[in-house]
Length: 471
Image (cartoon, rainbow, N blue to C red; front, top):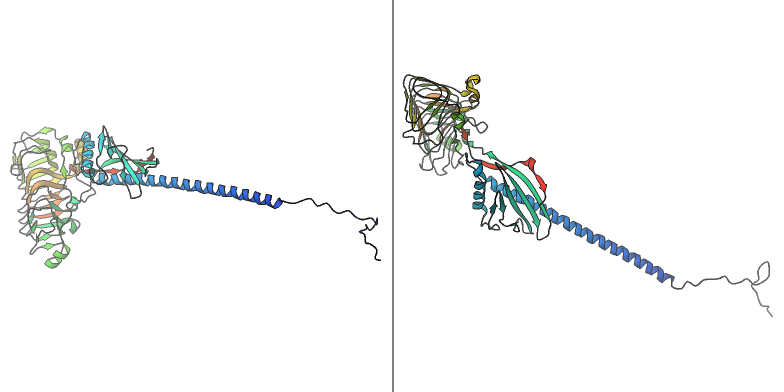
């Protein structure tokens, strides 16, 4: 018989007790629930963070679109202001009404702008504060206000996107700036027809191109007839279908008619602005009334005086001519200064005349003694400013230190000399260069306009005034 085996302790020979094992039922479920809660919290956190990020991005997008809309509004009004021409001489009190009338004409009833309004010294575009101009197809919109600051104006453009209450605004000041005109790029320019004949020459003083010719005449099918010997520069006309006659002449340095037509005749040229003459700056120095004599210093020729200087005359400073008047300079005329006529002259070139039949020796105002003539010496660039006058030269005139501007100009006979400026016929009348006349032109271009000569202005932005402001 096999004896029963007992689990005996090796030292005590007594049976060892069973170890205690606590119950572990349900712990896995608890851990699973903990992880589930943790992952749920993380998921909610990720969702909340993503949702917030999307909202932030959406808000930033709307802010950016509102900002772009405001910038679009500023670009929009900058373009339209650039199209507004302010004539020289408009009084400051009339500037803002002029702007408003021009913007009404260009903006009202055009697509998404029904009307604009003016309340005191502020123009609103569109008229009502709750209306906006659509800037694009995705809901960006803007509105504009223009505030009167005297000569300057202040533009404020407010932008928004759709109907969100997210607004952005930018502001910038604008000021008047005189427009540049290419008229002084030409040696001879006329609103009327230009004809040359005989052995006449029109030449550039330091560059053949300064002897260029321009006619803006649209009433004659042949605005320019070159019957003389030479035009050293090119010939331009604004009439795209007009004709230029130049048989037997040298034009632009060529005598070959084919090369002249190809390289030196320009049709359909944009018409540059012709100048407005304002002689008030000179009038201030004309303090003496003409009563006779042959030495005229800062002198006024009263209307209907009609003087004839047959034995020569010396003019010092300003000769200011009132209208109507007919002035004949015979013999030797010495002009140390400038000849101008009154603003808004009455009469026409048929009654208003300035005729130089003898020799003219001319010096610019800059040659005068400033201790005697003061700031008159700074009014440089002009020799003769005579709107509504016919001006003729039949004798030699040496070097003239400034431009000649009149309504009807003729240089005939043996007229010869150099003009330190341009010769400009400002009316639609025939300008003539004939006989043995030889005119040398030193045109000044657009960098230095003569005193008393003005062009229209337009509003330009002042970049250093740009600000982001409250809507």
